[in-house]
Image (cartoon, rainbow, N blue to C red; front, side, top):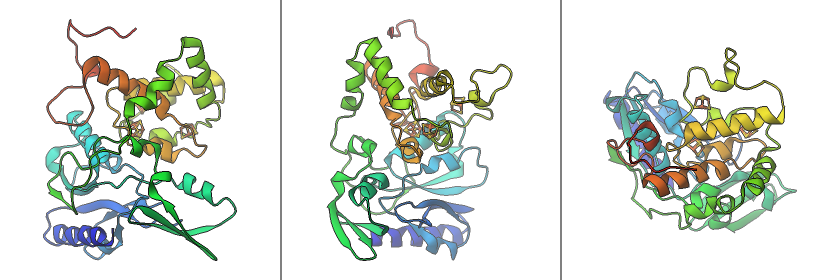
Length: 314
Ligand code: SF4
Ligand code: SF4
Ligand code: SF4
């Protein structure tokens, strides 16, 4: 990882000092352990703050929307797929982004790491080979990387950037190894009543902070339907109906567009697994339309398109 970080900084300095871009969007060390934060370097000096680790869980495509200057952006597989989606939806101009493609080793879920050390304060964690080294005041532990990955990273199908101007570091293994269709499997096999119970159980603790929406690069509406007052689609309180309306409608707005980047689940303060819903819709899109979002700049998303031969979805 250290060599890749050096390469990112060197490349960023080069692009900034040659005036090829106005800024370089990447990550810098977070103010708390295991949480890097999105960061924009505007000068070669600031580029020294750029970093790359298994804790880069925010989706940087979200920060490119309606951007007018020229931005270099660090993009692993899912982020690059969202950039493709945003170019197709006319939210980003291809000529305004310089994509620094990168391979993702599979991001780590900080909550899973903390759960392994419930009574300890973790001060530092980093990847060393196949292990995560976790350090605190009086301890150093090694845990397998595979045990603490974010759920979406197990079933990732594109770890290398799918589109880029330059690639930083080496291209690596493409798949997370798991089968994405199995994520949706438990719900899709349930009858409607059981499915509704599962849905209620999954979303019952939602506090409607909207962090999942705010970090999602698909959610760029000037006024989200939940904030509309005329007509008011959704109440503002904690009524179950309003919570469920938010999640069902948001999932449908993301259908055929979601890259399963996992940023929404990573951002949720109460640990809600909203991918159980979105990944099921994406499984339908794959099965019925043979389509996966963000893989090329030409194809049109099935739900933005109409053909008389479209399959029926019950
Ligand atoms: S981030 Fe979690 S708690 Fe906040 S609105 Fe989304 S699901 Fe609900
Ligand atoms: S939930 Fe729907 S309306 Fe709200 S920002 Fe996302 S896409 Fe737009
Ligand atoms: S819905 Fe979640 S997983 Fe899908 S693109 Fe948005 S943040 Fe990523």
